[in-house]
Length: 109
Image (cartoon, rainbow, N blue to C red; front, top):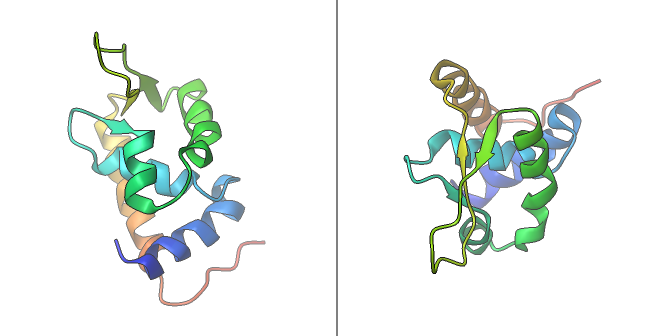
């Protein structure tokens, strides 16, 4: 995803999802393989502190949209996977991709 698309997604994430990084995190979960998402790896790839993803991930776990995977022995990284509702995640991935590609700022409210 381009930096411009990422910034658009972050801007719309606040009014739509209540957190600047929630939409970005949801898109990462939606497009992740079966291994899931590591917040530290995502943070490095997006050049932000991993802490920006912690509250949105906690909210997604509490809502049942994601789950924390058990730690693997010897592994320091923490992995998360989306819920098993594939139809929901396909819809979310489409919505989030459209929001990231919107040519003009989206006004909510």
